[in-house]
Image 1 (cartoon, one colour):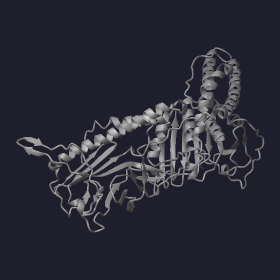
Image 2 (spheres, rainbow, N blue to C red):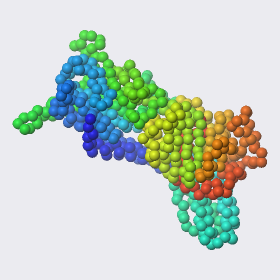
Image 3 (cartoon, rainbow, N blue to C red):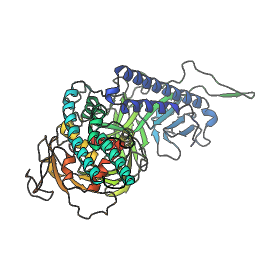
Image 4 (tube, one colour):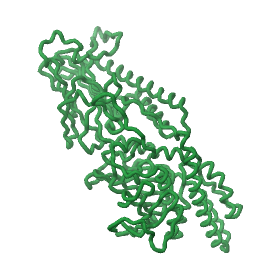
Length: 605
């Protein structure tokens, strides 16, 4: 087995992934149609060029097959591994009709070929790309104009409410510190200034850094001075519309005209693509007086058609039996159910499940065996919603500007750490046992992290079509957006958790548990949670708790209604907790908000 230096391959996959990432990371309101067309066109051209390079490399290798032949079998077998690509090539030099079982050394990968192929001048190629350059590029979402007026209304209301609360806190702290020494006064003033700006900044997904300058005017004048900045940079119509777009449910289920076509809204391809090909063996190199002479065909590498288009010369019906294929499931991919094999239909430009038989999967060996009528690209698919709906979830602080999001599903428990503008997979549990993953301890931006988790089979990120395949607890998108934004704002000092009563209330309200949780405090055996109900413009603490027998919207004794969660938690929060909230880093709160919007915990649990 060889590890070749494929330096010519390296730039192409990286460039392709970079272009895809640009389309995903760029806010929808900044994307223009001409840029989308240009980037997607470049992606397709690079994919075609990369595949051409693989064909040229295969042809060069096969021309030298006779010089690379195995001494025992007389045939050539070659395995070339790279970080993102593995190439398996077998050349039939001896054409022995009894040599029909092909296994590549040090692997369980191979073929069982029929007699007619065992006696033909052919080569078999399995090109396993750990990425998927076969599935057509999906549509890139753009923010529609009609959202603007609706979102502006709730955005301005929200910023006014929280602005007033934060400003009041700033005034109180300013008065308390008024008689202290100048050194202490300057330090507290700087903290208050950063808290005021960043605490309000964290309402929307815009990266605005604190100024860090010493305060020159009074605290009472600050809200007026930053009002224009807040409305223009943090809660602009386009930003809010982009957030709302993440929670939009598609009105119609995708329609498929062909039978056995894979619904890519319901299923997802995992472990990359296996390109299976039968190739015509090119003329071999011949040594002549110290030279190597080779005939180079003008048409280049040619595919061998099996079964042939016309079979007049063959009498029996079973002259062209299916080819048995053995593949190893990629080690970095998790299948919670037996994988389904899909083949690529080049004519229809989609994946299909017909033409595949005798599928067998050994989960312990991670080996899948199946028979194909004709070779071509194949992939393994899994239900994209196998981990939905969630059974429970919790968001709790770990340290300053660092939280842990835990999502529990039927099959797994996923823990995600979030800090600043980065996310990391902290741990995975399968059947209550820790499972190691290559993604652990790797910090990534939220978009890259979501892509990596999906490619690993850990999909906890619903799409606009997911509600067609999962029984969900529908909530109004405006209410959800408001809840996630304010939960993210408070996440530095407050823990939030799943509540069973969230499924009982109507779609205009969300219910969840909350409690103050300072990062350095000792873990509490039975924490005292407060049950909150939020409707987007009113928050209230309920009298019931998780162990109550029946649901009731009755207000908890000695509590009041409030317009935001920020106002609500102030009723029972300590000064230290509220200070941590106001000092939260804007990038951190933005990342928490993005992860909450992407997982949709309040609708999908």
